Each structure stands twice: as structure tokens, then as C-alpha cells.
Length: 99
Image: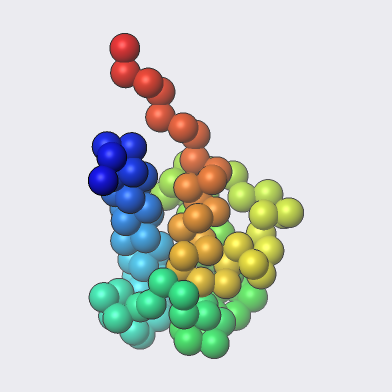
């Protein structure tokens, strides 16, 4: 695996861990983080309702320093942990190259 791929995977894993932590600690999902599937439905599997999705949006903005626009706050982008992780990765500023 190339360094860039390894780095992208590490970033994805870091975001994934934080999203799972938000679900457990802030949204009180009763499923342990290690049992949460990347593609499980946040609504059907974890019981998030409209208020839960708003809270997840706010927590992601605060923890990752991103702005989630109303256009990005869509069912597709908040369908699963993987979808939220991909959204955050897309919205995060690219790291500056080291000189």
C-alpha cells in the first residue's frame, strides 16, 4: 500500500472512530462502537430521529472543524457511519504539503 493510500485510510479510520464515539456518547446509541457496522442505517439500526441527525451534524461540525451546508445535510450523507465519514473527509481542508 502506498503512503498516500495508507494516510487516507488512517484519516478515514480516525473520523470513523470519532463518529462512533459521537453516536455513543452524545446521541446515546446503545450499540457498542465496536459492533457498529459502517453501512448500518443510522435511522433503522440506531434509532436516530430528526433531532438526532441535527445533533450529529452539529457534533461533526464542532469536532472536525467543518461546515455542513443545508445541501450537504441530506439523507444520503447521513445514512450510515460510512456516509458521514465520507462527507467529513470531503469537507475537511486538505493538509498542507510539508516543505
